[in-house]
Length: 423
Image (cartoon, rainbow, N blue to C red; front, top):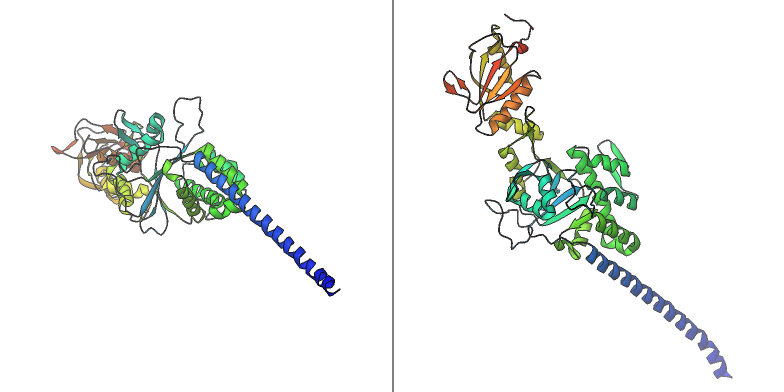
């Protein structure tokens, strides 16, 4: 009898043991199944992403640029290109629709540095001559674009990311909680708002939009998010696969580390390559010194942003390089001296004034020679400072003042008479 009661008391413990074992087994199977899902997603992402085999970023590739590509050893520099939609039926690469961005992290930088290169930036490419970055991309895609930028900037590029303009809107729509933030506040990142920002031409708006949405992308594709919601991560991978091209070195762990870095992305410093356009010819003017200063900051890892705007810096550098002479072509007493004072207040170096051979000239003319290249830029700036009526005149040789060559010669007409009357 005692044995019977003893057996009855032990039965519940065996039932509890079997229940716990079942729960543990189910939990283990669930973990294994979840791990298989994550592994499958990993394999899927591996094959979907990182499809560009770029020679330009290969460390074994012969050095480009006169000094070779340079960057601090602990820096990572990524070239990011924003393009129009890709059409497999069109036998050329899509247009660049925004500046090409060189993004550098590491090298002791507290925040990432973003340097914007305009699509119309002129570069020299073997076999093509002088062409714009937009033309380079159209001819040879990401590899030729990276080679051209490396050769021109002499900055080492570690990775290349080419993104269509549909990527950011699609990702914002998928994630749902992405916001675009400005100093005045944050707003939901609607598709139309992102598209407008991408083509705004405003460097600050473009960089802010890029950072806000990329931060959201990182949150959806880092390790923790992939584990919590593999379906969302899979959809994000599909969007990335359709709208983004990356080099093969970004596969696997590197891509996850990059995503986690994006998720934690905070403020960035940005600058842009300054360009000056001749309003008379419409051609872009070469401004080697201010351009190369910006690339040097990426080569040595120094602070990217300079005091003041890029336009102010460029104009200051250009103005310091030229000598200006002023002739009175109107016959109005003191007009040349007044113009000298006006130009010197703008920072120009005026080496002398005098009278033109004849008077009564109705329009002011700013004449300049072919050398050095910055002379044309200085003449353009000077003409803009004097007013809309001023004309530019390109000469085959340097203009003469009192028998000696000068960089820029201003012949003042009656259009600059402050009282609007001839003397």
